[in-house]
Image (cartoon, rainbow, N blue to C red; front, side, top):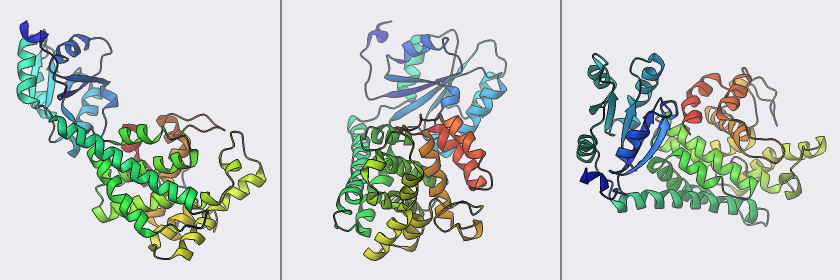
Length: 364
């Protein structure tokens, strides 16, 4: 038992996914001697695990069809392919080992637990992450958030003062944002940007995170991911010209105030067009991100055949973000309730995109 007293390796981070709230506590205590442990429900397995996880330990009832289907859907995805996966087997389960291998296990252990054996396997199969690699991931996330926030400053503080926003401002930021979401996770991005005290900044930063994560989940080409990033960053540029008293209002807007806010789409488009140098899709998104497929959106009441794919993506993400973020005039909705609200907008938003967005929304 001497090995159990060993100081945990702080550079080995383990993800323990279980379908039982209490039964995995013994395993978590054992694993803590090999590294830091993050325990989650099997139903909360992220689509894109953080890059600093050394491996995932799966402790589920392999006789549960629902649990097995959930694990299969997650662990067979590209994001988990390079990650070691250790499955816990019940000793009375026949053919459990074969089923675990079919689900992508790289090793298995059985109950009752032998702590020494488990730690030996963990240390052998789950490599430690070099400390500088973990630090690097955190720095990359920080640089991405800082780059996006710098664009917010240029939009909401300098642009109203007559200092123009340029396409180069977006191009410089998008590189750092793509890196950040590729090296960390959407959840970490959302946590970082949700701390911003300015609501107008925070909303655009959240939309940008969701939009880029969605583009990466869809497997878009690098250039298309960049197009989505720059469109998301600048989609709400017109809000810079709306009075702060309206933007920061914590109660429901009056009809007159709502009309002023609705004018932001045209204001943003005009500002970017007058500056020049912005690609067509950026202008398109700035003007049309509140258009709906049935023609009931604004400012031009476009119908589906006139609404581009990139506008549909930003509209979907923008609407979802509005529902789940903390606002002064309405409590945030859970991802489940927000997604259900979007499903009720059938005919107004792109249903195929909405279904594709589900793993991103629930995995965050």
